[in-house]
Image (cartoon, rainbow, N blue to C red):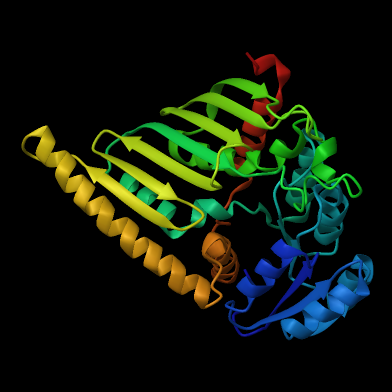
Amino acid sequence: MLNDKKPIRALVIGTGHIGQQHLLALRKVPNCTVAVCDRSPTMAELSADRHSAAAWYADAAKAFADFRPDVAHICTPASSHLPLGRLALEMGAHAIIEKPITENHADWICLREAAERAGLWLMEDHNYAFNPPVLHVRNLIDSGEFGDVVHVDIQFALNIHEPTGVFSDPHLPHPALQSPGGVIADFLPHLSYLAIAFVGAATTVRTVWHKRANNSLFQHDEMRALVVGQTGTASLLFSSHIQPDLFRLVVHGTRMTASISLFENICHIDKSQNGPGTGTALLNSLAAGKNYTLGGLRSIVAKLSSVPVSYSGLHTLVQSFYQSLREGHACPVTLTQIAEAIRLVDALIDKENRT
């Protein structure tokens, strides 16, 4: 627990796209002093100027030694997460690390043990689990209004073949290309922690991996999975060919079905209604039209005002992390939750589970 009156010190390492989102989120954290670090001095200085940071560094060890942060946000490629995470913990800083938290299970165990020895928080960014529509549905489930969750569908479609995209540049290979699951593995943490949030830890996993574009850099560009969880089932999809891009979560319960567009933060809930089935369908269709219209308008307004709609969960999670740290509450994403998500990612990648 930190002193409420003492400014909290946060260090953001890595000033790329996701690092910028962390810096934006930290603007909303009360009484917080921020420093930035990047291997590129130019990027570090530019980010410090943009976000009015107290200091900038091009060397992580010097940043920890000089700035002495209470919390380190590690927003660098996965290959650097273990050494930077371990450095943060050894220097007395809690660590928020972008997904995937480590490149492999052995590195995760090493990092987790370091956090437990130091008595410090270690958290992977499970940002979509904290998007407003997801939190709303989880509250409905907790209240009993939703009924029991029977099945969850999670679909992630992204054109990773785009010639100007970060994944398909042959002259600057993306680090994820070297991982056992290839580029798809970069997105599996999102699918995994969302599935676990609604159907519990996985007990059985079956997958299909496929390469649809034979002339691409990728070993696989399509993945389908069926997961049996402790309380329900989940189907997971990653596609690089379905268009337009989407990230959709559908939660099927015994009283309601919730459909969430995670990129736009639009949610529609179909409810069981008294009366004939055709009347129920009509009422739900009318409600859906209203929800999607209002949700679309909110999304447009948010984008015009530079509010990162798809990163709203990250902002909520970061604020919750710091508030919990100050007030002595539990970390919003526990080590157990991270471990279960990693275990599911490993199972999705494991060739033994492929059909």
